[in-house]
Image (cartoon, rainbow, N blue to C red; front, side, top):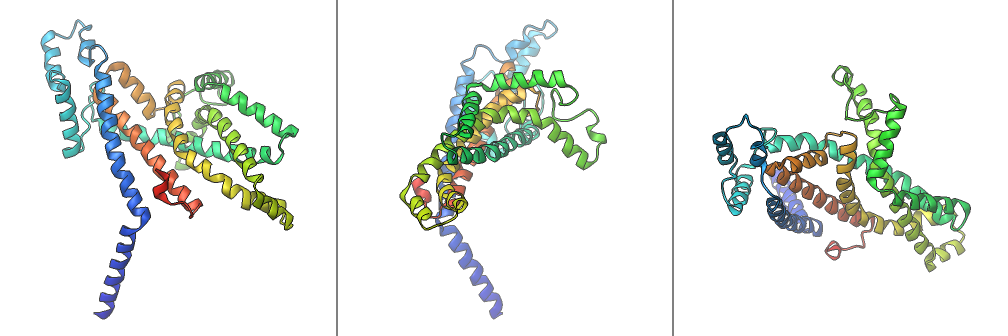
Length: 348
């Protein structure tokens, strides 16, 4: 009995420490801010979408097989006969009470089910691009900083300038032409092959990875070029600091000076950029998904906008805002882990 009481008290103390910790309070604060941000983003997006002439039902009037009575019936069914504030209020109330984002006009399916099908594909593409970008840009930035003004540094600078000068759609178009001319070395589009269901689980992973190569490159080129330049500049600033000169004067190996002392302090601004990097990748995914027929959130949103599928557009924009909020929160927490001296409340 005594042991049970001690265990219960220990559990309570642990829960109290967690709940009252700075990290927990910061996370709760950011989540509350995210809720307000999502509401404002949803409201602004809704009324901007409504400013477009016509709606989904108006596009059906061009079909002579659909009677005016049926069109009016659909208008009432979708709630388009109500005023803008009423439509937004009902949509928001369904989300809060039922977790229902509405029904897609075009697909005649729950919007939530459509999003759950597409979000993993977008996240897979964005995360893979993020990994590739950082895995290449950070080492090249370090080499460029260490070899400052040497031929290696100049070559990397030219590569970064060229990479930043190419818009994402130009890179995607070039890679698409490359895929068509080298077929079947690289798949032209899609996420899987025709015989995907017949493959083993390992074969399915390889098949998806094979289809990811060109879209990932299209997303990574511009981000890689910018991150490589930022890494070089940040590391050069740190290498000029007095404590780096002191470490070298003490006879520490050059690798230890660069990778332990210098890089550890130069990495903080890069981690801060992680949230913005995810934001740019998600926005750039629209282009990559469109060119390579990737079944992701960006392509779904684009098609929804073109067909004026109101509830699907709204839910897609809200989901994008959720992903960006999570990305920024993760970046802040990683910054705290990388440098414990940083106080989370000073990151706002």
